[in-house]
Length: 125
Ligand SMILES: Nc1ncnc2c1ncn2[C@@H]1O[C@H](COP(=O)(O)OP(=O)(O)OP(=O)(O)O)[C@@H](O)[C@H]1O
Image (cartoon, rainbow, N blue to C red):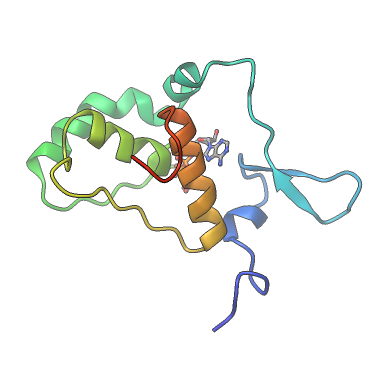
């Protein structure tokens, strides 16, 4: 079974990924994208493509037991849908679980969502 060092997260090496930028000092290396410090996080959330579909999505998800959502990379599926569900009170009795293919990706995602919810990582998230 390969470890994280053998196969870094797919997201890290997806060309054109919104998450990563090239390291000019180390050819071939990709770095996490710099945060957009000038735009408030609430505004960043509303700028994501998925935000436009939020009411329709929640409406549909309330009526379904299972759903498969397909959307562009970086559109907000992973970071936003769990928050939409939580904010709408869906799944609050249990746990909203999110999977990622790699540990690094899972930690990065959790950190981002905690930042967006303005909570310390390890509590609500
Ligand atoms: N760790 C992070 N640090 C900073 N911004 C992030 C981070 N993770 C996500 N974002 C921001 O949130 C946006 C939505 O990311 P999200 O992972 O929800 O997209 P996605 O649709 O699930 O993408 P993918 O299909 O590649 O998993 C990104 O475009 C990026 O701007």
